[in-house]
Image 1 (cartoon, helix red, strand yellow):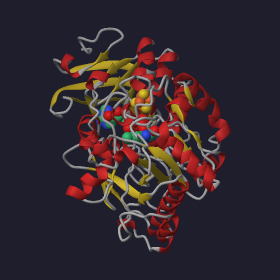
Image 2 (image 1 turned 120 degrees about the horizontal axis):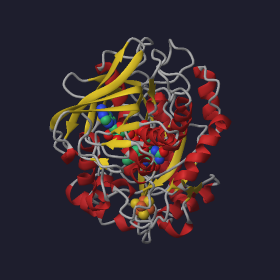
Image 3 (image 1 turned 135 degrees about the vertical axis):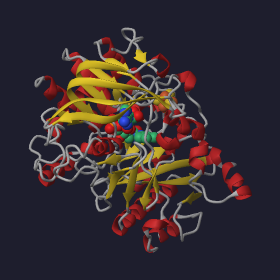
Length: 513
Ligand SMILES: Cc1cc2nc3c(=O)[nH]c(=O)nc-3n(C[C@H](O)[C@H](O)[C@H](O)COP(=O)(O)OP(=O)(O)OC[C@H]3O[C@@H](n4cnc5c(N)ncnc54)[C@H](O)[C@@H]3O)c2cc1C
Ligand code: SF4
């Protein structure tokens, strides 16, 4: 029986499932984030019948909540409280149509040549240079209107970063984003009410539907069905948004299966399906992040941080050294977890919000590796990961660079957020302590939403889960498209890269079925 009440051209939602059902398709794609959305669109465009299955619900501007904690509870997995053990680090992962594109900052960066050169030489990849991928970056960029953030929506908090970088002699540039008509409201993290951000739910997914793809939300895939080297579909359960209550069962039978459930969900799915695609024993291993540290700076005059595109200036100056610096903004409730103090002290800091800018640095912590395991009683992952002491030093260096920029831009004080050092520093001389102090991994307040490598690509089938276009080495027709296939962290924000890789994969698949 097919999904009975689906009309042509609509996204199917929880209320429409009134029985167990099954679907047939050429291709079933699991997960509607940047990877799954691009694959679905390109395969529909190639004339294939596509079913896109997503566990989360669709959101519209009416559903968005500007209050950070309420929004996180609604749009993110484990209410936004997912975290690693080993070194504790919150890891935000989406649970909604469009995946993290609905709640991310729309930053689109192409990694420089050296990133892909390292991928190629260390992981036996022959066709993954920047030049190989540029046509795919170009196509995705054009589709999504990727362009530098215009001056009129930068706002002071972003332009102060540029001023500080200029004064320090560090290169900086306006961030390129997948946005059309940004109003500078700074609320990308809780959903763009202006619908300016070209998240997947308003870009690739509607176009895929127009081309005939069926999009089914509130369906949790729990198992990939396979015999020998061939996958023949997926099955799982209907899940009610927010409550997580499960109801009817479903199956999608397909000639080819693409997993794009995200770097932490896809390995769990493979492990729970009978340890699939794992002859290399690499499924769930090699887990890497770009851990980020945020530094707040208080200026003598108003910054009016609520105005300005969420993250629209960045510096790639230290990319080779291992970190990238960027401006940021989020709902105050989310930013508050980074501020030191409680009670009156915290209230006092809140009173300085209007003069505050928050900038962050994300680091390529190649030496810090972890793993994802399946939990017995749920599809949520158990993640363990440790920040390596050398990587902690790199992050302290990135905080020091941010401090330099703040003081060069005229900040009167910064809140560095390093245990064992003062809560506030008032001069660049004082900030030198960031380099002198022996910073340990547990001294840093870190978070990450960039997750990689749990089903990594490798030219050698003994060392990786998928080949260069994301086909599982152990299978003829099982593919992975999400950031789990990155062989190493990419040094810059990953969304653009995962979409470029997904487009390349889809074009290759279209020729094979
Ligand atoms: C708050 C935040 C801000 C970010 N900002 C940026 C940014 O500005 N620029 C940038 O480059 N990167 C950013 N990132 C990272 C970037 O968004 C992700 O790397 C990217 O979305 C990964 O795409 P994906 O398709 O691999 O996975 P996801 O976007 O995670 O999509 C996976 C999808 O699969 C679904 N799914 C999971 N399990 C199942 C299942 N069992 N059955 C069915 N569906 C399932 C999930 O609900 C989700 O919708 C940000 C991430 C977050 C969380
Ligand atoms: S800054 Fe505001 S208007 Fe611009 S993309 Fe983000 S949420 Fe939309």
